[in-house]
Image (cartoon, rainbow, N blue to C red; front, side, top):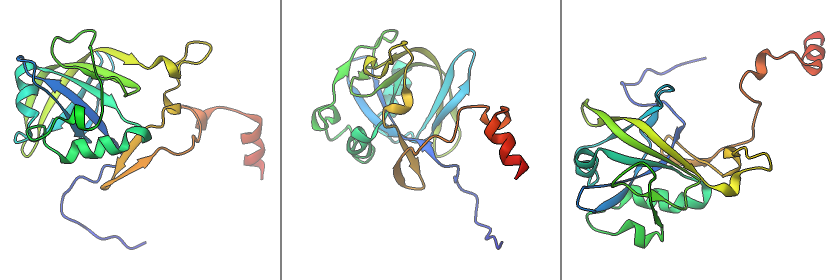
Length: 197
């Protein structure tokens, strides 16, 4: 199999395409679409977002030290892209995309996006100035979930929400499940039969 060698670049895909809501201490808020995001730590629960300093939301993130990561779905795909290419300096993204501000439980400034099935409330613990992007490391303060996706046992069915992924410049729906964590090492009748063949 032939391989080409390319210059260094970000080819770690797919990524979650999320809408980040934030605000300054005077009440001005905005939504920014981010794909440079991910989990950092389980205990304490931490994640990060990376943002270019020239982005309109950057000063809000730095001033308030708060943001909400709002997971996106197929229903929110248009708003997800639109909020990523338009600047909050020029337009009111909430109004134009008909998105609803909601109250965060543990934050003082940043609102949640009500239409998102999951809202992860974060407080910045550190800002790393790394180059083109600055990384905002943050500790999760609370998570809000849409009760519409709770099953009869109270379990949240995240994968039924129609989550959106971002890969190499494209937005994609998540596909079918291949199994749950650890399925490859579980002993089942079907797997044993498969090995005999």
